Image (cartoon, rainbow, N blue to C red; front, side, top):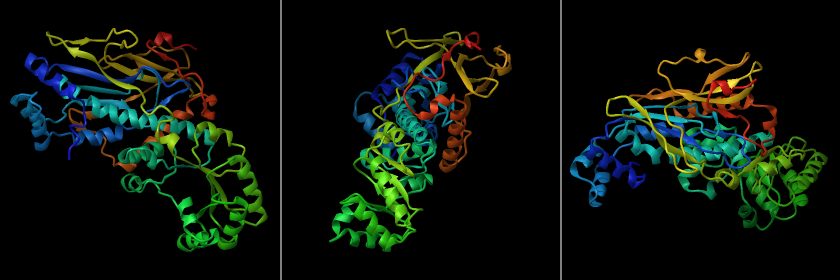
Length: 445
């Protein structure tokens, strides 16, 4: 089943009307950007473009799709025939997956005819808005964890396909594992999981439940110890598994206080290598508060996979340039109140100081053949170009598989975070960390 109809009707009605008016084949540039970040967010993380590339490669209107569109009595035979042969033959440039973005960052640029480009709006936005929302909050959680490992475990809180995509976005920003088996198969993300409270409640005693789990999974398993009495559960688990028990999981109550008591008890029992994992509706704020507790890792679900109260990143897909009657390209922009856009095709750079730290996001009008060394910046400043060409006249230039794309994106993200001021390391709220400027003259010392 194709996904060509996972879109908005107005994209197709615009295409047909433009074809009848003779403007559908005008060259155009569309850009994806967000006007603002959620309040308190200091940066956003751009993910999902690797999934967009695969979706574009398979973007087709098959016979079943065409039959359904014909049944709507909106489209003529000529237009339906065009859709049946649709293949994207334009070009696409974007920020590297895992890169940071800020208000008005042109994270994606699509160069194509109007009819080639406008039909991709919903496809591109639905993927990028979802995936970038997950990675943006996930990155904050990773920073709040201060090096302690994180597990993505939110599959039961979202649509089944969204769950798989969430695991991918979380992996890019540093989550080391997922509970979702399909994400493990599709993307090569390590999968983890042992038991829930239901397993303990199934048995006549907690000891019987622990014995069954350890017999099945080995002493290195993680035992859930807060179904009844935590102290009794820890004692029982160590008696059964021995001092080499892998981990215990805490899923309720005052996690910091419980972790301190459990750590002391484990050490008294000689299980000094047994780790403590905390779950229970965690977010970046709670993880930060738990920094001083003897917790070795966190499992995070709902607050990660729902974007931390911001389930859509806020990206929009706007026409910024189109071909005029004389064949020249004309910058265009909306003037709507509170929704005005910046006209013209753009290029974007991260400005770095002499110490390698990022100081600005620089967005300039695109000039054919323009080179970075033509930019006049204050002494000690240098720029890092943010756009890379991913599709050139319909040909995908990124031939990596999804597992390799995730690994590369994680490296990109780590490097981008390392460029920021250390004030970002708490993962907490604040002002947008980099000013976005539209002129090299605005780059200050």
